[in-house]
Length: 396
Image 1 (cartoon, rainbow, N blue to C red):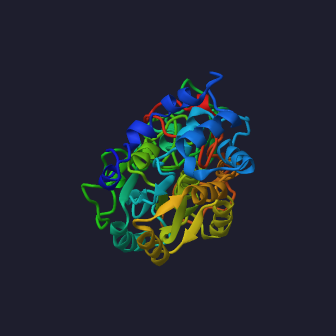
Image 2: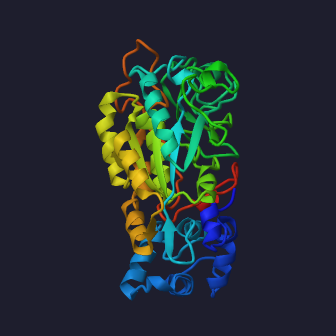
Image 3: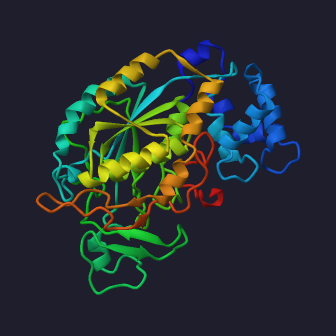
């Protein structure tokens, strides 16, 4: 995938040659060869690449603060990559939208972790939405038969757990021991679900899918779970979603699916952290627990993620077609999601999916899991995409 046809006709260079080859840009403007850009070097970059912006010294300092979310005083390669995502040489950014459909799979609707809020009702709404967007991505929970999130695997002694117990129950929280792949962290245990190439892992039969859809598999490694469609729970590995969106020049990400207060929330927070203008389509989601909806909305708002309806999403996407963000408009969007990483780190996530049909909702706050304990810098500049499976902890 490269740049769009319209971008080629405008004479712009492809996303791959300009925006994903950030190391080349960094080397050009990193005059002191520190491996990062300081504010003076950022100024040189802006004057050479976006002369139309004509930033004042105060605006340059504001831009530096926007990109440098880890407050290191410099801009790293990953931060620079996110900032430069799909900018044209004219200093503007074409608006392109993506609908990210999260985990609309049988096990979360009618299977081993069936949703108690009639999740099947969101499927016609998602089907009506999808054709309004420039790009559609479908994420799948896609676990091996033995997985660190399965209570059955834990009880069979196949999960390395700190202070192991004789037996574990579903929805209990444990601490997974550190291994070579990721750090020690909390994990909630669920009934076995979304096992690769099983009926439960397939999307609901009524969900419309097309050959043009992109697919993201998450939770594929036996030792790490993944709530977000962007990263696993330790942020040790990238699913490749950021790169997919970058390559299509996406600026605006709309999240829907299951469940609102866990996987949809986690994906939306990472979307904002990766520099996308991010929305959650509330009536095209269902929560784990209705009591957690308002706190989820507050967290998303703090991270600059807007909650909207299906009708509002369609109006926004249709109204933005063919339009562009000016440089300063994009800065304003980026600033709203400055706190996405911090919000995600502070978030106390519950279970991945709701309790089985007929079971009482899990009490809000009944589990305490660090979803993103090693997250790196955020919106318009945090750790950007790496090839799927590449260790990102060095960037954290």
